[in-house]
Image 1 (tube, rainbow, N blue to C red):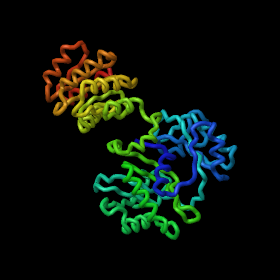
Image 2: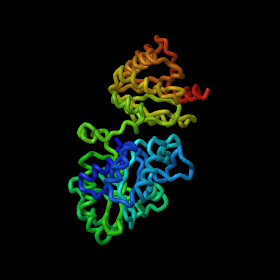
Image 3: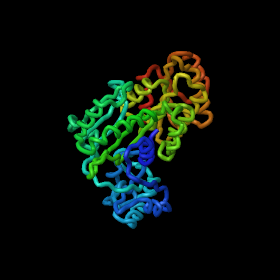
Image 4: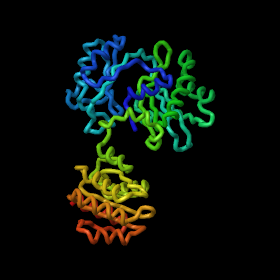
Length: 397
């Protein structure tokens, strides 16, 4: 689960991290109160969407030379002008894709005197099996570009969970960030506070870009991106208050109601598969034959007819889908359950696009019989390669 910048800062401030004073703006009616709550004369008006690159983004409804999704304002009137232009308009960034995202929330923040911009994140390091800090002196930039062009400027510091953030870890971080003076003195508390916030709330990612050194020498979290581990949702009920459903794909929201692993993609072939690995292989082979998957969808090993029916409805509700590939290898999952779900869904919502089904494994003959004895227009496939070729051919006409 992703949350907005201002929400992430609320969480981090609760753990003692240094955050500038700021006020969320949900409508133009909130602007005057937000201005009065901040000292000025420098304000920062920030678009709140679940995507990066906001500062360099462009609003669809505004001229090409209009300012981006993060703007400085030097007077209350300039704040009001920015809010009027930004709120409710569609911001396009390199992470939103060409469709962009509508800006339904803004964050008005007190300005800062910046001396240096640093990059700091905490994540689960899959290579070492530990939580790691990623540190760079190149803050405020595209960290992927930094890693590609100057990898020596990216430092990874693993944390031993049993020991926590040790003095040696702090020394490594201070060195990686090239901190001195007041900033170096403040570093131990800040990095331990960030680590505690990460582990206490089951974050999957905590990114502070930039972490700044101000002209007075102090450290401050100037921007924050937080993503929570969905598998730990059951013990993080308090964090659910930050969920913004308007930022999520409606199909993904519907899938979550049935405990389906679904991710919307940009292609035109809908996929229903059991098992994450098989789902990835299915998407890969669709691409191999020159087409693009419309989704990742894993119905899981213990899916019921109800879940399969729901999954099929979600796929068919996507207007981009021009064909559907059902690829099931029945181990725990029974092929007859899949077949029953497909037939039930087709009877309820109809079938307007080609459907290719590949079944193998537990109860496979029973599953094939259910499909063959129904009035569903199914193209049978012998194996995954055959299935991929058939659905791509059907979609491409």
